[in-house]
Image (cartoon, rainbow, N blue to C red):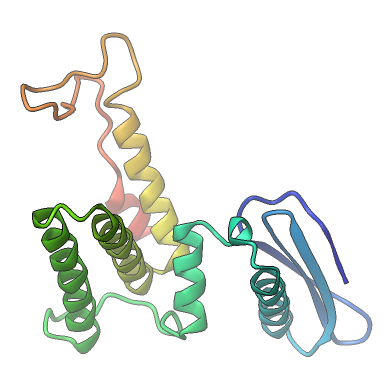
Length: 192
């Protein structure tokens, strides 16, 4: 049922099997499961993901858990917070209020830890900010657009530090935008 794999991040592949059923192979950090006999591709993928996560948790292999972004997506999916993805039009919408409040709470905890010079709580707070911010992005635009937008930001940031004479920093140490800076095309991502 389980065999070694070489995937560093969570991946799954669904496929038709005998009759009108489906199977799925899921891989994560060197662990792989394959299950078959499900009525739909979604059921096959869900079962394989769950079996894989159960295996990783039983083994106590923290090194086999997904990275923080993939893990946040998995959490959002398991918590059924991605069943309906979209950016509600009004700022007072319940979803937007919830996401703002969560982000505010986590940022406040991080800020308080900074004031108290508590490195453990600073790390915890920053990671919580990342999880809530990424979860909010997933809830607003969905996983594919979130990843595409993130790639745009990474490309843009790298354009500030890769090239002759780069990076350029101001007196405070902030990296500046050089002439060859590439702005992220978030609009292009969201409209495709």
